[in-house]
Image (cartoon, rainbow over the protein chains, first blue to last red):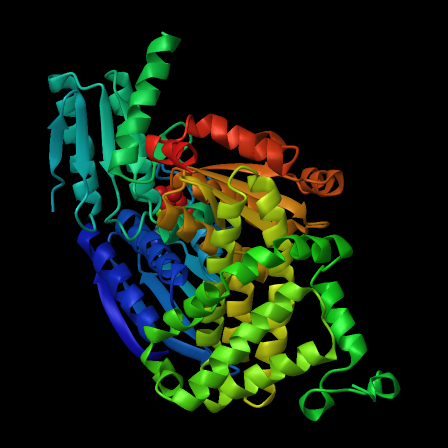
Length: 133
Length: 123
Length: 318
Ligand SMILES: Nc1ncnc2c1ncn2[C@@H]1O[C@H](COP(=O)(O)OP(=O)(O)OP(=O)(O)O)[C@@H](O)[C@H]1O
Ligand SMILES: [Mg+2]
């Protein structure tokens, strides 16, 4: 990641801070129009999961490139309870928080790449990327 | 950042001015539910023009505002969803089924009249 | 043109980029059929009547961009550009698309290159010019929106073939930013038209791919905002096939428009496309579909109710 920025997440205002910074960085990286909103929304989802399920963690944001393509990378990391069944968590509508269960699968649709690593008792790391058109 | 709620006749207008935290959203929900009950409002317009992001939490809260105010006899119209925000909502898989939407406040008030009429006829 | 017969198969344009077959292919892939040529014939006079206005629309659009000053401040270039733009429209409206026609396009492209006019800027100006023409045609056909629309669509088909040639001419001499320019072409190829206050028609012409479908969503939602549209008639008459991604996109566009407060009516759904939508799991009952464009516009009128007084007064005055 290039010019990595970190946003500590432990309260609901941090979610707003993280997504606003994400929008700014994405604009600097050359994204425009609705892409900025899609990126900010995906950040909002993973940041909220940290607050709700892991209490605290951090969001790392930065530019990235691969094979000459430029993009933005977002990492959401926490040391919370972890997710026992990732496949299940990635399904539309699955929620242990009596919510809509759209955060993770939705964030995956909003971005181009989405990886999630989680271990029960250790924590969760979500890595997302979006490439500039 | 709390949201100003204006009373205009039997309609309440909540116009969101800036990005909201989860707490702000929940506060808006409580205040609207309380005011609709106390003022016997018949309609609620939520103006989200200033929201540059509507994620699953914001959408869920707006849906529950609509449900809570309907229980108290008022209809809700959401106005001012930005084009980019609409795209993000659809990609996320979020909908506002059963809640009326309109382009802006002026239009929203018109729609509200239609919805209230329809509701009255249904009864 | 004494040597035209012997020369008919020879390539022309810079570096032999063009052959007669190529022009044919472009016209064909632009979907320009005999009925379009006939349609253009019917509006020819209308276009020529306001020729100066349409030429002016092109340069007025450029005037607001500092990057265009290199052209606008050069009287010699401007004079030639004005003349070529005029010829351009006259040729487009005349309905004969031959070698001379293509050569003329190349001259225009080269001139803009010399003036260092950015391709994207050129296309913006072209779009402004098309809007100017569209406005006049819709006015002329105020009592027959569908008819006016069909003729303007025919004109637009030629316009896009034309645009492709001019852009190619500019591009062959220049490198870079191809993607951005292609994107602009795609954006331009799906403009939404305002028929009356609060009502937009979105004609979808030709093949849709995912990339264009995305442009279409963005463009439509912005147009809804800009025109304060309440109803959109999305006409799919020109679409013969869709894949699952595109189908999904169409559905999403409808959903996004509804979130903004607009109702989308889908018309011109061929039974093939309808069938493949169903096969792809699209619930057609969630779409507001109506047979043809005419029916769609009538339904839209019904939703919108009687025209607002300002609009209603117009025919009475005229
Ligand atoms: N960082 C995390 N740590 C632990 N569990 C998580 C984390 N993120 C997600 N989960 C689990 O995955 C489930 C699905 O998450 P997702 O964000 O898709 O839905 P949700 O948060 O329940 O609802 P929504 O995001 O729609 O409000 C959650 O209910 C939770 O059980
Ligand atoms: Mg979530």
